[in-house]
Image (cartoon, rainbow, N blue to C red; front, side, top):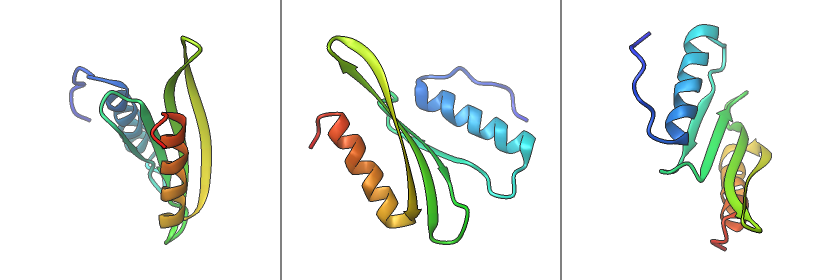
Length: 96
């Protein structure tokens, strides 16, 4: 395992967790991670079968002046599920 590097934002923290988990547990199906700079959106991805995906999507928002993290799970065909998750996140962030 490589030497830990300073983490820049929430995406870096999530990616470090996923890397560490995959290295230690060596799961048959490794976790994947994705997000955007600054960490407003973070996603854990798990592909249990070819063409299928489960996405655990987290969105950081401000509601009534207070910070909140919204979480939603999406499962199904890879392309459809990714679009569904993206549309949900965009709506939560006020982009749609």
